[in-house]
Image 1 (tube, rainbow, N blue to C red):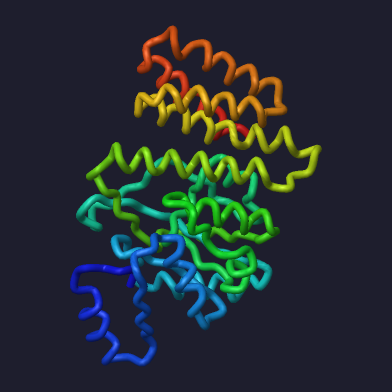
Image 2 (cartoon, rainbow, N blue to C red):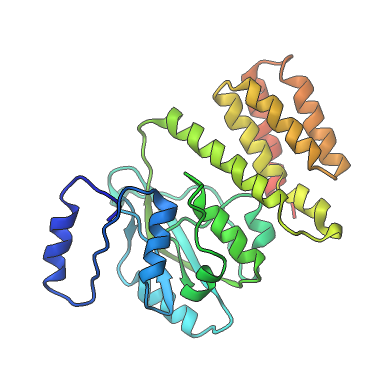
Length: 278
């Protein structure tokens, strides 16, 4: 209970009287990442799973994941199909085509996160060993954690079944977008600092191309031209791939010339190609 001001504690206390399996931990409001780390600190199980207050698990969700993991002892994390909804869970829908694969997913995750925070079950010790979540991030803390987990060598397993629902909020979209894009920038900066082998630097920059295109398009939508200039400069400084450097230099030249709507369209097409490429 991360400093809630509603009826959360009373509801939890009533639940606790009917079972001895529920522990209630109350903290000051410290944000998602730090709160999940608190949960990790108190967790006793071999596996751990997360569920934010506005999202949903479907019936048998935990059983499906635990059975899958118990049958695959070399798998660190299982993730499943996810559906999204606004207010009515019965009107859930799918968003885009996501990777559906097993193994080490580091290079796929670099292109963007496709595993929501309530969409996986993971070995508790594995997530503890990488330091849990980064409390400095105000968004995309789950993407950052999954990247570090996969970089450590973790093997992911895919379950072709919908086991969870994620709620989409319509309010404060602009404010939320600014927070999201700021965190995306921070995660990419962290990836640039990862101890990637020299022969894999081109692969790293190519894998991050889609996310960097996405960040620029988000900044264009927010009309934040000053941050765009600084970010393209940072991209070029960390871009060993000549092809990628050429793309971002062209974007830098086109932004002052073309209408922003045209550039947003072009960036969307480039993002799709970058995402679908190997």
